Image (cartoon, rainbow, N blue to C red; front, side, top):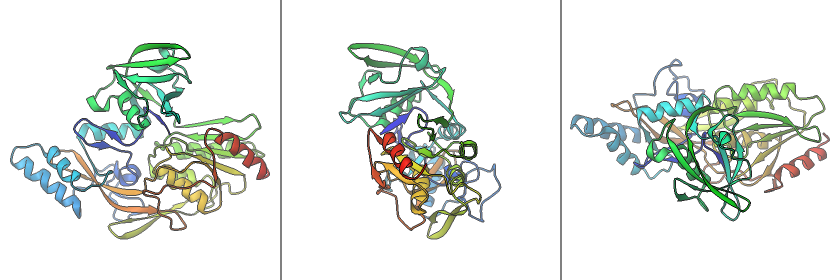
Length: 387
């Protein structure tokens, strides 16, 4: 599994809340409208999350309101109510955390500019260093081993936890705060102190592989990423096969994932989902490239909106999926604004792939299993598809 100190879930805060890349309403339209896509009840864009929660959301809102009336902390009361739900994706954000979350969806984040993955032996390896980042300025390179963050050994820890340490989530660290990294390159071990910075990211990168295939990597579905994917497909050489790299993609805006799906599909169903029992659907726009050979790369870090895209391409026979089983985040959260301006999100439903498969807790199995040699396997598959 791989990850970047950009967008990764879940991110744990010291007070116990999980700031997650929620699958649906916050990431689809909730961050702006408080609604789910395709919901005719959606208010106009630019409004705040819903102030009329339903079901279990009412209990959370009631707990927050009662605490506020008694002069106690509404957010702490809401967190206690959320913890009783037993759902790992239910969460409460402070106003500031929610604003940070929205900024991240705009392609901005606070961090040091490292991407990393956990190897089979548990070691954490740097896989990429963002240009102009604190990590790049310190001379850290892909292939370096990350041994510790602020004195905490990271060997064997989930990449999501390592990302949280790099970003300083547990201490609410912001730009300009220091973070001490223990690193190793070959036999050399050293410690480097970096200062976190506000960084922007190109969530979509495009490159030509040695055999002429076009590789489109989507790190996260931030605003505008879907259209970048569509442009990349249109601009790819006519004879070029396509590799869509979704490894380590922890999700993002589902509307952007649907736009990306539209690059490869000529309309039709992308996914269905339910909200408090009401069935809704997401559809691709017509006019996508449906003939060019396509392989999608996935792994255990492929989550949420990235799984939605993978499932659509796989079910509709548009792509051969290569890699390892995806994470399995297919639940839908609805946001609601609490009296003190914080935001609560509770699970209200689940999405399914076009064939009706559930993803939550199951993930998506690839058509062809591959690990370290996944890209090479993808290129072999492309050649067999007649690229």
